[in-house]
Image 1 (tube, rainbow, N blue to C red):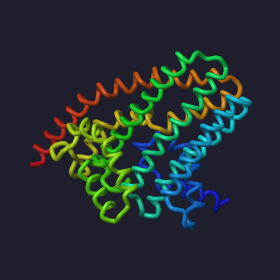
Image 2: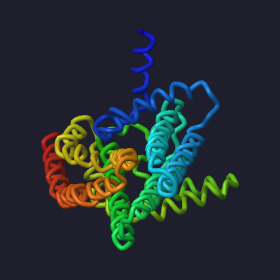
Image 3: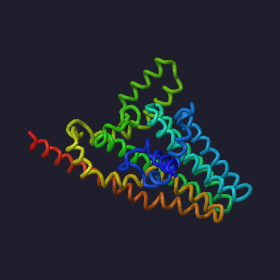
Length: 316
Protein backbone atom coordinates (compact mmCIF):
# COMPACT_ATOMS: atom_id res chain seq x y z
CA UNK A 1 0.00 0.00 0.00
CA UNK A 2 2.83 2.41 0.86
CA UNK A 3 4.41 1.72 -2.51
CA UNK A 4 1.12 2.50 -4.25
CA UNK A 5 0.74 5.77 -2.32
CA UNK A 6 4.33 6.75 -3.11
CA UNK A 7 3.81 6.00 -6.80
CA UNK A 8 0.62 8.08 -6.81
CA UNK A 9 2.51 10.99 -5.23
CA UNK A 10 5.25 10.57 -7.80
CA UNK A 11 2.70 11.17 -10.54
CA UNK A 12 2.69 14.84 -9.56
CA UNK A 13 6.35 15.20 -10.45
CA UNK A 14 6.57 17.11 -13.70
CA UNK A 15 3.21 18.89 -13.22
CA UNK A 16 3.05 22.56 -14.12
CA UNK A 17 2.43 24.91 -11.16
CA UNK A 18 -1.15 24.66 -9.90
CA UNK A 19 -1.69 28.38 -10.52
CA UNK A 20 -1.58 27.87 -14.30
CA UNK A 21 -3.08 24.39 -14.59
CA UNK A 22 -6.60 23.67 -15.79
CA UNK A 23 -8.72 22.14 -13.05
CA UNK A 24 -9.65 19.06 -15.10
CA UNK A 25 -6.02 18.54 -16.11
CA UNK A 26 -4.65 18.86 -12.59
CA UNK A 27 -7.09 16.46 -10.95
CA UNK A 28 -7.88 14.04 -13.78
CA UNK A 29 -5.76 14.10 -16.94
CA UNK A 30 -2.35 14.73 -15.36
CA UNK A 31 -2.63 12.10 -12.60
CA UNK A 32 -3.46 9.55 -15.31
CA UNK A 33 -0.56 10.88 -17.38
CA UNK A 34 1.66 10.71 -14.30
CA UNK A 35 0.98 6.99 -13.92
CA UNK A 36 1.87 6.56 -17.60
CA UNK A 37 5.06 8.56 -17.10
CA UNK A 38 6.11 6.27 -14.24
CA UNK A 39 5.92 3.38 -16.72
CA UNK A 40 7.74 5.29 -19.46
CA UNK A 41 10.62 6.67 -17.37
CA UNK A 42 12.78 3.49 -17.50
CA UNK A 43 12.15 3.01 -21.24
CA UNK A 44 13.94 4.58 -24.24
CA UNK A 45 10.66 6.14 -25.46
CA UNK A 46 11.19 9.87 -26.02
CA UNK A 47 8.76 12.72 -25.20
CA UNK A 48 8.40 13.50 -28.92
CA UNK A 49 7.39 9.89 -29.58
CA UNK A 50 4.78 10.21 -26.83
CA UNK A 51 3.50 13.34 -28.59
CA UNK A 52 3.23 11.41 -31.86
CA UNK A 53 1.28 8.62 -30.12
CA UNK A 54 -1.12 11.27 -28.82
CA UNK A 55 -1.72 12.36 -32.41
CA UNK A 56 -2.42 8.77 -33.49
CA UNK A 57 -5.04 8.39 -30.75
CA UNK A 58 -6.75 11.62 -31.85
CA UNK A 59 -6.92 10.29 -35.42
CA UNK A 60 -8.41 7.03 -34.12
CA UNK A 61 -10.99 9.04 -32.18
CA UNK A 62 -12.07 10.79 -35.37
CA UNK A 63 -12.25 7.50 -37.28
CA UNK A 64 -14.30 5.89 -34.50
CA UNK A 65 -16.80 8.75 -34.77
CA UNK A 66 -17.05 8.15 -38.52
CA UNK A 67 -17.70 4.47 -37.72
CA UNK A 68 -20.42 5.59 -35.30
CA UNK A 69 -21.98 7.60 -38.12
CA UNK A 70 -21.83 4.77 -40.66
CA UNK A 71 -22.34 1.61 -38.60
CA UNK A 72 -23.38 1.83 -34.96
CA UNK A 73 -23.54 4.67 -32.46
CA UNK A 74 -21.71 2.49 -29.95
CA UNK A 75 -18.48 3.39 -31.75
CA UNK A 76 -18.80 6.82 -30.11
CA UNK A 77 -17.83 5.16 -26.81
CA UNK A 78 -14.61 3.99 -28.46
CA UNK A 79 -14.09 7.51 -29.81
CA UNK A 80 -14.34 8.96 -26.31
CA UNK A 81 -11.85 6.41 -25.00
CA UNK A 82 -9.42 7.16 -27.85
CA UNK A 83 -9.74 10.90 -27.19
CA UNK A 84 -9.06 10.36 -23.48
CA UNK A 85 -5.93 8.37 -24.40
CA UNK A 86 -4.87 11.21 -26.70
CA UNK A 87 -5.27 13.73 -23.88
CA UNK A 88 -3.35 11.57 -21.40
CA UNK A 89 -0.45 11.04 -23.79
CA UNK A 90 -0.51 14.76 -24.62
CA UNK A 91 -0.11 15.56 -20.92
CA UNK A 92 2.53 12.85 -20.46
CA UNK A 93 4.97 14.14 -23.08
CA UNK A 94 5.75 17.36 -21.20
CA UNK A 95 5.82 15.64 -17.80
CA UNK A 96 8.26 13.04 -19.13
CA UNK A 97 10.46 15.74 -20.67
CA UNK A 98 10.56 17.77 -17.45
CA UNK A 99 11.42 14.73 -15.32
CA UNK A 100 14.22 13.77 -17.71
CA UNK A 101 15.42 17.37 -18.02
CA UNK A 102 14.94 17.23 -21.79
CA UNK A 103 12.28 19.92 -22.30
CA UNK A 104 12.86 21.72 -25.59
CA UNK A 105 11.40 24.40 -27.82
CA UNK A 106 10.92 21.87 -30.63
CA UNK A 107 9.03 19.58 -28.26
CA UNK A 108 6.68 22.42 -27.32
CA UNK A 109 6.11 23.22 -30.99
CA UNK A 110 5.38 19.59 -31.86
CA UNK A 111 3.00 19.41 -28.91
CA UNK A 112 1.27 22.53 -30.22
CA UNK A 113 0.66 20.88 -33.60
CA UNK A 114 -0.86 17.85 -31.88
CA UNK A 115 -3.10 20.18 -29.86
CA UNK A 116 -4.54 21.39 -33.16
CA UNK A 117 -4.84 17.88 -34.64
CA UNK A 118 -6.92 16.40 -31.80
CA UNK A 119 -9.91 18.76 -31.87
CA UNK A 120 -9.82 18.88 -35.68
CA UNK A 121 -10.25 15.10 -35.93
CA UNK A 122 -12.96 15.08 -33.29
CA UNK A 123 -14.94 18.00 -34.70
CA UNK A 124 -14.98 16.40 -38.16
CA UNK A 125 -16.05 13.06 -36.69
CA UNK A 126 -18.77 14.63 -34.55
CA UNK A 127 -20.03 16.59 -37.56
CA UNK A 128 -20.28 13.34 -39.51
CA UNK A 129 -22.25 11.75 -36.67
CA UNK A 130 -24.67 14.69 -36.47
CA UNK A 131 -25.22 14.61 -40.23
CA UNK A 132 -25.92 10.87 -40.06
CA UNK A 133 -28.89 11.45 -37.72
CA UNK A 134 -30.43 14.11 -39.94
CA UNK A 135 -28.93 17.34 -38.60
CA UNK A 136 -29.08 20.05 -41.31
CA UNK A 137 -25.68 20.63 -42.98
CA UNK A 138 -26.40 24.38 -43.00
CA UNK A 139 -26.36 24.21 -39.20
CA UNK A 140 -23.68 21.58 -38.62
CA UNK A 141 -20.85 23.12 -40.64
CA UNK A 142 -21.21 26.81 -39.62
CA UNK A 143 -21.78 25.99 -35.94
CA UNK A 144 -18.98 23.40 -35.98
CA UNK A 145 -16.57 25.87 -37.60
CA UNK A 146 -17.52 28.63 -35.16
CA UNK A 147 -17.03 26.24 -32.24
CA UNK A 148 -13.64 25.13 -33.55
CA UNK A 149 -12.49 28.74 -34.04
CA UNK A 150 -13.76 29.58 -30.54
CA UNK A 151 -11.69 26.71 -29.15
CA UNK A 152 -8.59 28.02 -30.92
CA UNK A 153 -9.19 31.52 -29.55
CA UNK A 154 -9.76 30.30 -25.99
CA UNK A 155 -6.79 27.94 -25.96
CA UNK A 156 -4.47 30.54 -27.51
CA UNK A 157 -5.52 33.10 -24.89
CA UNK A 158 -4.89 30.55 -22.15
CA UNK A 159 -1.52 29.51 -23.55
CA UNK A 160 -0.27 33.08 -23.96
CA UNK A 161 -1.57 34.03 -20.51
CA UNK A 162 0.02 30.93 -18.96
CA UNK A 163 3.42 31.65 -20.52
CA UNK A 164 3.34 35.28 -19.41
CA UNK A 165 2.22 34.33 -15.90
CA UNK A 166 5.05 31.80 -15.53
CA UNK A 167 7.53 34.31 -16.97
CA UNK A 168 6.51 36.87 -14.34
CA UNK A 169 5.80 34.68 -11.31
CA UNK A 170 7.85 31.48 -11.74
CA UNK A 171 10.97 32.18 -13.84
CA UNK A 172 12.53 29.10 -12.22
CA UNK A 173 10.04 26.78 -13.95
CA UNK A 174 11.14 25.63 -17.40
CA UNK A 175 8.68 24.68 -20.13
CA UNK A 176 11.58 24.12 -22.53
CA UNK A 177 13.51 27.02 -24.03
CA UNK A 178 12.29 30.58 -23.71
CA UNK A 179 9.08 30.61 -21.65
CA UNK A 180 7.47 33.24 -23.87
CA UNK A 181 8.61 31.57 -27.12
CA UNK A 182 9.66 34.96 -28.47
CA UNK A 183 10.16 35.40 -32.22
CA UNK A 184 13.88 36.03 -31.68
CA UNK A 185 14.22 32.76 -29.77
CA UNK A 186 12.28 30.85 -32.42
CA UNK A 187 14.52 32.26 -35.17
CA UNK A 188 17.60 31.20 -33.20
CA UNK A 189 16.26 27.67 -32.78
CA UNK A 190 15.35 27.45 -36.47
CA UNK A 191 18.88 28.49 -37.43
CA UNK A 192 20.30 25.75 -35.19
CA UNK A 193 18.04 23.12 -36.74
CA UNK A 194 19.01 24.22 -40.26
CA UNK A 195 22.70 24.16 -39.35
CA UNK A 196 22.26 20.60 -38.06
CA UNK A 197 20.54 19.57 -41.30
CA UNK A 198 17.17 18.96 -39.64
CA UNK A 199 15.02 20.66 -42.27
CA UNK A 200 11.70 19.20 -41.16
CA UNK A 201 12.23 20.47 -37.61
CA UNK A 202 13.15 23.88 -39.05
CA UNK A 203 9.95 23.84 -41.12
CA UNK A 204 7.85 23.10 -38.02
CA UNK A 205 9.48 26.01 -36.21
CA UNK A 206 8.86 28.30 -39.20
CA UNK A 207 5.17 27.44 -39.34
CA UNK A 208 4.77 27.77 -35.58
CA UNK A 209 6.57 31.11 -35.60
CA UNK A 210 4.10 32.42 -38.19
CA UNK A 211 1.23 31.18 -35.99
CA UNK A 212 2.54 32.66 -32.73
CA UNK A 213 3.86 35.97 -34.10
CA UNK A 214 0.46 37.72 -33.88
CA UNK A 215 0.04 36.38 -30.34
CA UNK A 216 3.44 37.75 -29.33
CA UNK A 217 2.55 41.09 -30.90
CA UNK A 218 -0.67 41.22 -28.89
CA UNK A 219 1.23 40.31 -25.71
CA UNK A 220 4.04 42.85 -26.25
CA UNK A 221 2.38 45.64 -24.21
CA UNK A 222 2.31 43.35 -21.16
CA UNK A 223 5.98 42.51 -20.76
CA UNK A 224 9.27 44.40 -20.66
CA UNK A 225 11.80 45.52 -18.00
CA UNK A 226 9.40 48.06 -16.51
CA UNK A 227 6.65 45.43 -16.22
CA UNK A 228 8.57 42.25 -15.39
CA UNK A 229 9.03 41.41 -11.68
CA UNK A 230 12.69 41.19 -10.67
CA UNK A 231 12.51 39.66 -7.18
CA UNK A 232 10.20 37.63 -4.95
CA UNK A 233 8.37 40.69 -3.57
CA UNK A 234 7.62 41.95 -7.07
CA UNK A 235 6.50 38.49 -8.15
CA UNK A 236 4.14 38.32 -5.17
CA UNK A 237 2.76 41.68 -6.27
CA UNK A 238 2.19 40.30 -9.77
CA UNK A 239 0.36 37.26 -8.40
CA UNK A 240 -1.78 39.53 -6.23
CA UNK A 241 -2.93 41.55 -9.25
CA UNK A 242 -2.98 38.90 -11.99
CA UNK A 243 -3.72 35.66 -10.10
CA UNK A 244 -7.50 35.91 -10.56
CA UNK A 245 -7.05 36.55 -14.29
CA UNK A 246 -4.94 33.39 -14.58
CA UNK A 247 -7.43 31.30 -12.60
CA UNK A 248 -10.24 32.29 -14.95
CA UNK A 249 -8.04 31.73 -18.01
CA UNK A 250 -7.38 28.20 -16.80
CA UNK A 251 -10.99 27.34 -17.71
CA UNK A 252 -10.23 28.06 -21.37
CA UNK A 253 -7.38 25.64 -22.08
CA UNK A 254 -7.30 22.65 -24.43
CA UNK A 255 -7.80 20.16 -21.61
CA UNK A 256 -11.15 21.64 -20.59
CA UNK A 257 -12.40 21.74 -24.19
CA UNK A 258 -11.25 18.20 -24.94
CA UNK A 259 -12.89 16.95 -21.74
CA UNK A 260 -16.20 18.42 -22.96
CA UNK A 261 -15.70 16.79 -26.35
CA UNK A 262 -14.88 13.46 -24.66
CA UNK A 263 -18.12 13.60 -22.69
CA UNK A 264 -19.95 14.52 -25.89
CA UNK A 265 -18.57 11.40 -27.58
CA UNK A 266 -19.66 9.13 -24.75
CA UNK A 267 -23.16 10.62 -24.51
CA UNK A 268 -23.47 10.53 -28.31
CA UNK A 269 -23.51 6.73 -28.13
CA UNK A 270 -26.90 7.15 -26.44
CA UNK A 271 -28.13 10.37 -28.08
CA UNK A 272 -25.93 11.88 -30.85
CA UNK A 273 -27.69 15.26 -30.73
CA UNK A 274 -26.13 15.88 -27.30
CA UNK A 275 -23.00 16.84 -29.26
CA UNK A 276 -24.77 20.15 -29.82
CA UNK A 277 -24.67 20.82 -26.07
CA UNK A 278 -20.87 20.59 -25.92
CA UNK A 279 -20.56 22.81 -28.98
CA UNK A 280 -22.91 25.41 -27.49
CA UNK A 281 -21.02 25.45 -24.17
CA UNK A 282 -17.82 26.24 -26.06
CA UNK A 283 -19.48 28.77 -28.39
CA UNK A 284 -21.57 30.75 -25.90
CA UNK A 285 -20.61 30.86 -22.18
CA UNK A 286 -16.92 30.17 -22.80
CA UNK A 287 -16.83 32.94 -25.40
CA UNK A 288 -18.39 35.31 -22.86
CA UNK A 289 -15.65 34.41 -20.34
CA UNK A 290 -12.92 34.82 -22.97
CA UNK A 291 -14.25 38.22 -24.06
CA UNK A 292 -14.59 39.44 -20.46
CA UNK A 293 -11.00 38.40 -19.69
CA UNK A 294 -9.69 40.06 -22.85
CA UNK A 295 -11.45 43.32 -21.95
CA UNK A 296 -10.42 43.18 -18.30
CA UNK A 297 -6.74 42.35 -18.82
CA UNK A 298 -5.68 45.89 -19.73
CA UNK A 299 -7.01 47.56 -16.56
CA UNK A 300 -5.54 44.78 -14.39
CA UNK A 301 -2.13 45.10 -16.03
CA UNK A 302 -2.18 48.89 -15.62
CA UNK A 303 -3.01 48.56 -11.93
CA UNK A 304 -0.12 46.12 -11.53
CA UNK A 305 2.31 48.44 -13.36
CA UNK A 306 1.27 51.36 -11.14
CA UNK A 307 1.68 49.24 -8.00
CA UNK A 308 5.05 47.97 -9.24
CA UNK A 309 6.30 51.50 -9.93
CA UNK A 310 5.17 52.59 -6.45
CA UNK A 311 6.89 49.57 -4.87
CA UNK A 312 10.15 50.31 -6.67
CA UNK A 313 9.99 54.00 -5.72
CA UNK A 314 9.57 53.09 -2.05
CA UNK A 315 12.43 50.58 -2.23
CA UNK A 316 14.94 53.21 -3.40
